Amino acid sequence: MATLLHIIAHPNDETQSFSMAAGNAFVQAYREAHPKDEVIHLDLYKAHIPHIDADVFSGWGKLRSGSELSTLSAEEKSKVNRLNELVDQFVAADKYVFITPMWNFSYPPIMKAYIDAICAAGKTFKYTAEGPVGLLPDKKALHIQARGGIYSTAPMSDMEMGHRHLAAIMQFFGITDFQGLFIEGHNQYPDRAAAIKQEGIDKAVSLAKSF
Image (cartoon, rainbow, N blue to C red):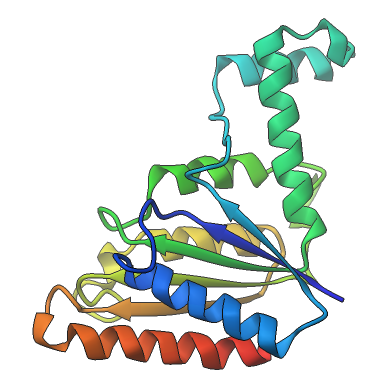
């Protein structure tokens, strides 16, 4: 049995979001194709995702210097513990599907906060004399993202920062099996929006069967 972590970084539901519609179709098809697997939903807009701030740096510094967890302030302890929970949950999963919209050439800031939470030395990567090495080589991931324009090809491909950043993070973790499903152009070509949405859903269902 494998565990799929379904990571949602979208404030809207499937009735308003093409990426959410495709993401939900993917999860439903995945459950049908892999009935013994566990699917864990993590809605970043409903979860507590601490930002890396002064409390976190202070708490980490105390722990690195040998202090006990009990010596941390309430804020330091709460944030450090939550960050540990998030990265441990990520490491424990076998597969990941990220659902995001494209916002300002990237994705919502809550997604960046989550990435910061799971970039943890000793858990998702480690430092060596030859440079950092990813610790999750046997995992696989998929990024589903809707984009109002066409960003997977020139001339706008150089403006796309979200998927490329996520791809770099997955590579940093050692995850080489990383795919992208992009639902593009529904704002640029509104007369084709319904067909673009359905094509994205169909692709998501197909991908889920072999993921």
